Image (cartoon, rainbow, N blue to C red; front, side, top):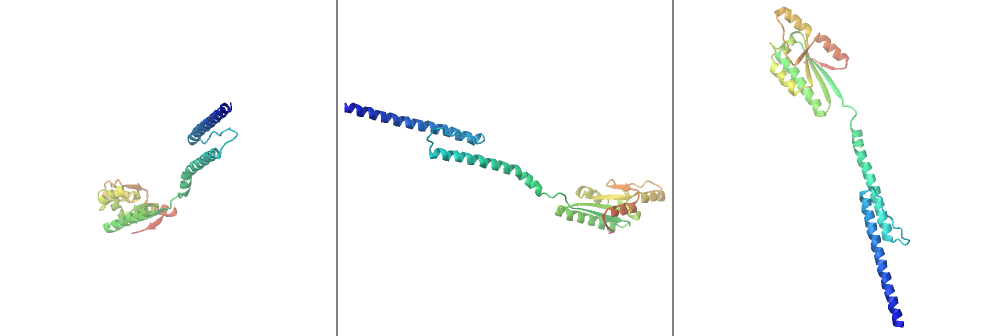
Length: 215
């Protein structure tokens, strides 16, 4: 009789042990699924409802929370980074304006004016600053921009492509006087623009704060 009773108790203990292992295994599977969902779906996770949760379960739950908070902080940081980068950009870039006057029919003076224009443009380009340069011709200097008599015509064509910061103005008053004196049309190179008066053009630009240089 005692042998039968002991055998029954032993069987009961084995059954209880098996049941305990089964419950722990099921809880582990559920917790793993919850952790995977937390990694992919915004950090929500399953918390064991058993009345006797283990320290390992609490540790995993806290880890999931930390991952979720860390990801939110990283996302927020990424969103702010472009804004911070833009905030460091300068609101505007300093600009410079220069007038170069040519009023003599002298190839050396014309080339000097073009040399100055190219040098100034390159200087500020290297600094990353904006610059505008106007070469204003009047009187005998109009020959610089005459299509039929310019000694620097080839160079004007080259600068139109390589140095767009430089523009050219031809005096309309001088053009009209040459037309009457030579009794023919006075053609102007296509890189230049005719203004009413070269002298007035220089005055107006100076009144706007442009720097003035006569080569």
